[in-house]
Length: 117
Image 1 (tube, rainbow, N blue to C red):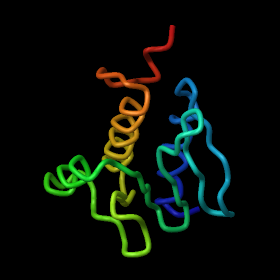
Image 2: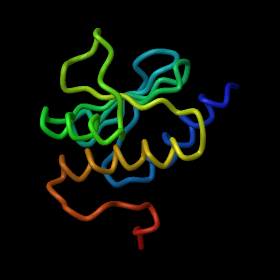
Image 3: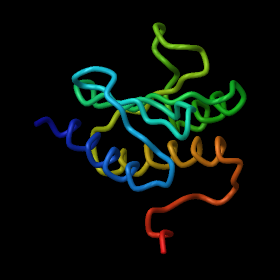
C-alpha cells in the first residue's frame, strides 16, 4: 500500500464516524463521501487526493490561502483538490471536509469525532 493510500484510508476512517456521513465506492480506487443525498467530496486512493466542491467565492478563498488547489480541468469549476502526502495533509483534508460538512448541515462550529457522547 502506498503512503498516500494509507492517508486516504485514515481520512475515510475518520469520516465514517461523522453522523450522517456515508462512503460509497465509485470505482476500485475512489470513494464518494456524502451527507444525506449531498456529495461532500471524493477520496481517490490511487492518486492520493481528496476533491471537494465549494461555492466559487469559498473555492477562490481556499485556493488563494493555499488550503487547496484548483480543480484539474476535467472537474467542475467549483472543485478543489488536496494531495495527501503526509500526516499534515490528513489534517488539512479533514478540515476541508469539516468545512463542507458544516456548510451542508448549516452549522458554524467545527465537528470532531471526539464530540460524540
